[in-house]
Image 1 (cartoon, rainbow, N blue to C red):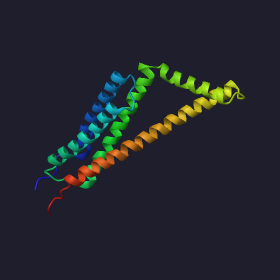
Image 2 (image 1 turned 135 degrees about the vertical axis):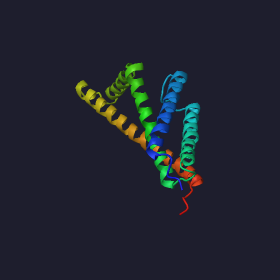
Image 3 (image 1 turned 90 degrees about the vertical axis):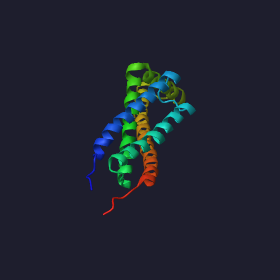
Length: 174
């Protein structure tokens, strides 16, 4: 019996980088079409689902093929988890690139709208207090959004890789 042909970590790194590149390409297309990288509309969601449902099982299948036709369920879930992390990192890097380089005024506009809203809702507060509330709220909101996005990517990646792993599961015969 031949030993495993490929390391799972090497496979994850190679196909994870390809997956991350595809997510970056998807974000670029979304920016060019909708002028915002994080827009949630039918076309963008369809592209995301195509990437998740299309590429993740394909990468699991390639790993199984390179592993002499054997695949453990744990390996499929590991590939799905790591791909979810690649998707999250790529999306976060693209968002930071968008926010800081492409449109640096994006964050300023968001803060200004929040500041105006706080002034209208709380006219008794001093401008210094409003600025402090606005900056704290914005940083907390971005952290919560990133955590929610990470958990969403992991949950979807786990579901897709679990289903793909269950269909492709094959133990080595002793």
